[in-house]
Length: 94
Image (cartoon, rainbow, N blue to C red; front, side, top):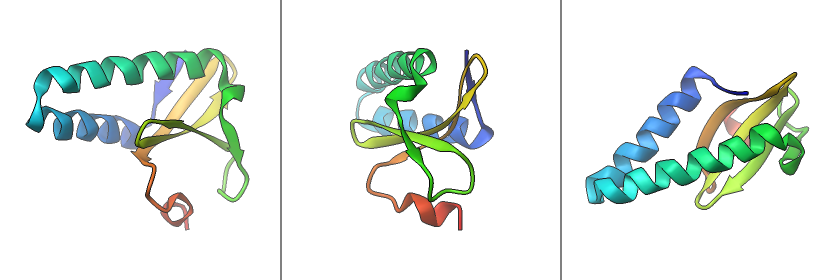
């Protein structure tokens, strides 16, 4: 099962909008690739590394120029954020 926080939904929507400004078809392909990767993470959450420096037991997984922050749930994952990999992630939770 794959759940999204409200912030993650906003992040993903922003990623699509940014890509769609240049090319809507490319944005749709990017969205499809992200969805496939997130489904893989829901089935295999151990593929992500634990982020112990964050306040909760988050894992992260790189997807191209993005970093997925998620936490395991009993039957899948909750995507907490999807951010540019270049961002200082720990600062978001300070």
